[in-house]
Length: 394
Ligand code: LCS
Image 1 (cartoon, protein in one colour):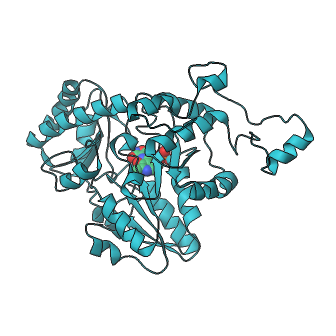
Image 2 (tube, rainbow, N blue to C red; image 1 turned 60 degrees about the vertical axis):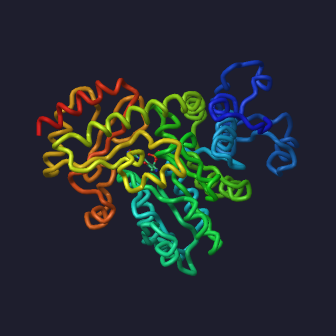
C-alpha cells in the first residue's frame, strides 16, 4: 500500500491494509496458518531463493503480521517494522543484532527490570558491558562513550520514575560517534512521541501496553531503517524466532485503531489525578512529565504531545505503608503492566523492578515508597475517589 501522508488518526485505521487485496474484507483477515503451500516444487525453490515474492512459513512472514508491521512503520515514520512475541523479544532481537562480544552499551539511568536483566546476562555471557548515563547534558553523555560502544539505549519516559531524556540531544551526540540510538517508546506510543523524527535510529515497543491497549496481548514491535530491519528479520527474528502469533497481530491491529482517542483520555485523566495527588498530605512527591512543576517538563513539551498515562508518586512512610495503601483500594487493580482500560497500580521495588539489586534500584530512584499508577479510561473522579480513600487510610 502506498505511503501517502495521512493524519495519524487516519493512519492508525488504514495503513498497511487495503480491503481490495482481501475480497473486500473490512478488517484485516486473520491468517491463522503456520505454513503456505507452493503450487510446484520449483515455486518453493524460487521463494526460498528470494527470486519470487510470497509467503513460505509464518516464522518468516504472515500476511496479518505484515499488515501490522507496515502500519507501525507508517505510524513511527520509519522504513520498516517488525513484530515480535513480546516487548522483551523485540528488545533482545535489537540488542543482540547491534552488538558482538566485548562491545559496550550506554543506557539511560533507568530501565524496565527485564531489560536490566537482559543487559546483566549479556555482560555475564558475552562480556558486553553497559554503563548508565543520566543523559542530562551532551558532556555527560559524551563522557560515557567508549571506542567499543555499539549503541545508546534509551527509555523515555523511564519506567517507572517518569524521567524524560532529550532525544534530539542524544541523537546529535550519537551522530558525532557514528553509533545508533535505540529508543524504547513503550510509555509514549507513536501518538505522543516519534523518536525517528527526532534523529534516533531504532524504536522498540512493548506493544502489550498502549498499542494493544486492552490487556489481552503480549507483543513487541521494532521500527527503523530498512537495511537494519532486514538484517534483524534475517537473523535475530528468523533464527532466534521470537515471532508474534497471527492472532496477536490481529488484536494489535484492532487495538491500534483507537490509540489516539484512548491516549487522549489516558493523558487527560492523568493530568486530573496529578493535580489531586499533589495536594494530598500523604503524598510526598509526584513524578509526571506533563506536570508544569516537573523539572523535565520543558523537554517533554519539546518532544511529546502530552505527558502520557503513567504517574509515579512517593508516599511518606515505609514499604509496608505502600503495600497497605494498595491493599486498601476497592476497584483499582493491583497489577503490573500499563496502558490498559483498567487503572493498574503496582509497587516497582517489589514487583517490576525487584530483579534490580537494591543499590542499583535506589540509584535509579526506585525507593520502597514509590508507587506506579497506570491511569485507565474510567471516569477520573471514580479513580480519584478510590485512590483518595486508600491514601487516607494511611
Ligand atoms: N520495555 C518497557 C519500557 C516495559 O515497560 C516493558 C514491560 C517491556 C519493555 C517488556 O515488554 P513485554 O515483554 O512485557 O511485552 N513492562 C512491564 C511493566 O512495567 N509491568 O509489567 C510489564
